[in-house]
Length: 210
Ligand SMILES: [Zn+2]
Ligand SMILES: [Zn+2]
Image (tube, rainbow, N blue to C red; front, side, top):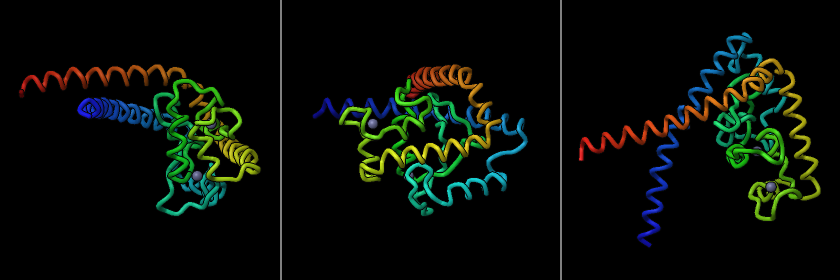
């Protein structure tokens, strides 16, 4: 029991450190997003863009299609804004989903390398229950949303709808795509340097007070 407590506490310390690094990752991606939206001359807060999202998704989750109530909605970045997917807050990559899907998608988003699809969001929509082992949590999730006979068809339709929407913002999506490799390189560096800075700096500060 005491060993478990120690492991749990160690894990919590590790988590706090990666929270800081992830915050930096997000700040960096937002800055790059600002640069790109300045270049293309419009951003996701523009009325025209908001209206386009509204019209296309009609207040429904972009993945599962359920009606969004205000307490269940999340701003969704199909290409996740993390160090693996390097998605940006730009037109075409900002839509709406339910909190449940937003949360379930994280499993695919946090993979170093994707195997089911080229992008995290398409990977999320590829768990039709035929490609993963029986313990796959995402396959199990989709099983709770639709009966088996509708699942593959609905997953495909959701993918098509998002692809069509993103095609309208090809210019910004393409800038994100082109920058992907260099973004990932910078993100890895930022993440690593931030963690080592946090470790060293805290160690010194702890020595100074105790
Ligand atoms: Zn959903
Ligand atoms: Zn699966």
